[in-house]
Image (cartoon, rainbow, N blue to C red; front, side):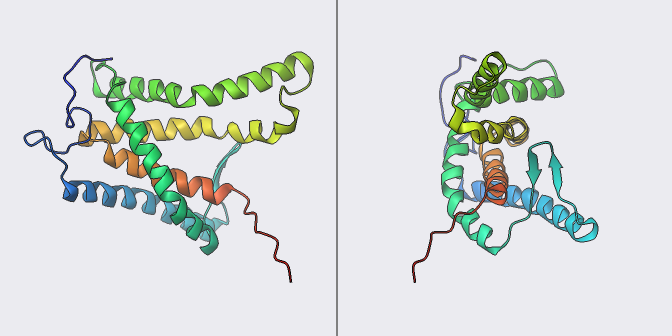
Length: 204
């Protein structure tokens, strides 16, 4: 970790080094940029689905479109994911910020891999424990949670993507907001679009 005096600008919270204060207009612009990035990605996916009847998927990782019901759920989940990614970006690019590696490309790759490790450690521990126990005993350590382990695999590429977004936008803008907002919109969309919806049983 780098040793520097802690202030809002150096931690990526402030957008103005001279005043060391929040600039809500710049934060709003950060959200607008994030929205345009994610919305353009969604538009490309929608066009591919319309023209070729395909979605974007690799192994257990797939990006799907949302119907109206899922979009409503997406809006409800945004605040919770937003809070998480703002805090996550604040910690990674503040207290855990790594030193420069000589070039922008090397630094971006190094930071992305390191932050992926930070974000994935708990999930990787779960997968490794379950799969390792299965290899040794032919039974999962938590037999009733076989699906949980399968679902956890998708967070490996997802955390690589979010760590890259967070690192790249922080290095471009100098603040945590664009990366945090982009991750919030993308991950909320990804999670909501891929999960089964359990409707409550209605009694006549």
